Amino acid sequence: MTTFAPEVGTQLPPLHIDPISRTTLALFAGASGDHNPIHIDLDVAKSAGLDDVFSHGMLSMAYLGRLLTDLVPQQQLRSYKVRFASITPVHGQPTCTAAVTQVAEVGGERLATLELKVTLADGTVTLLGEAVVALD
Image (cartoon, rainbow, N blue to C red; front, side):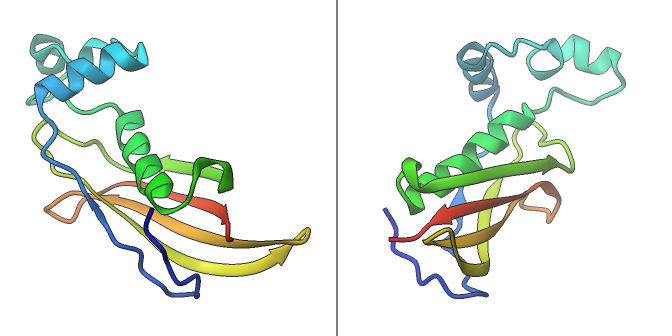
């Protein structure tokens, strides 16, 4: 677990993900049960007017979840929500980031609100979100 200073404005260490491979997409399809062919079948993607398959949005959400659980134990997560902003193409290389936007005492618990983002190497933001975590 990474220790972080829960002050407003703190940028947490980013999580850099290897480029998304076709193997990653196939394995995630099996693990998640999401076998939508747009994610794994090039012919289906091309018939939809795309150049290639693209990543499951929930895969990016899972990577953000990993960023969070690298930060605090899972039992300290109080909320986690995301909004999908753009697709992650096969071979895209996501970076997950988080910044502290608020620290407050709520119901006897010290909580930090984090602004979350997944960004590709070209600057495209694919996922935006927010999490609330309990601090020690």
